[in-house]
Image (cartoon, rainbow, N blue to C red; front, side, top):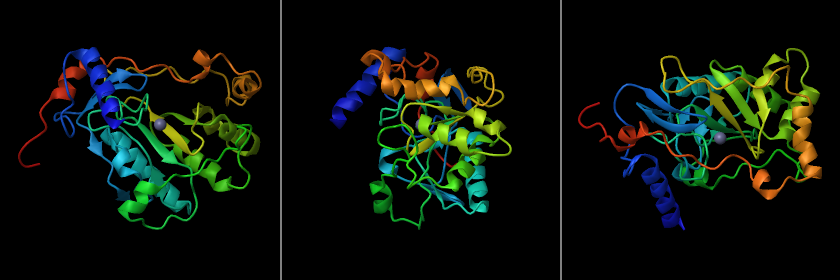
Length: 280
Ligand SMILES: [Zn+2]
């Protein structure tokens, strides 16, 4: 099974930019992001450590924690903010591979070092052994019928955490299940401007996906169009997600995000570059 997945990935690379097998570790050189819409590659990525204040990586054998240095800095800031708000250590899921490109877990985006999955499980989080971290399956916050949050799990701290994430510097969007967005729409009082950046998406019932903007100085990483105006998104565009529960779309429409695209040709040398050798 695993062998088949590797073969499929290899085919994707071969189809993308000539024969290449990604070399291990990050591609050496100045930070450079190539791609659009979450699909691409990164040179000069750095890894989020497994434990920093407020954050713990989990499912390490199945995940990848590399990103643009600014992404890593913003996530560290999220850990500090969450800690200051009295929130338990956040469990971190996938960022990107050491050089970007498709991730083994089948993620469609996460290829450019500017995406991060952060679990929304806010129960007590003691320091875990490596084996315990591998076995974690943080629970869904959404009812089985998809029409609302699970009231047994939702806590005010979830809204706090989503606000802390959406107001990080450089955030483009925070993706969550429509039921979680709906809960924010119905419950957040006071300053609500940040709700606009929290957008409904397929799945994302147990984690949020933070998508950062292309950092400055990355001309090969064009900016994404902003979320469609106007307002906070607590409107018909949100209702659409619930209407489709009543009137499921045809399967080819309902399967979610687009199929993976080929990597940009300029990613070929980045995926194939020999790893840095020697000191440093
Ligand atoms: Zn994600």
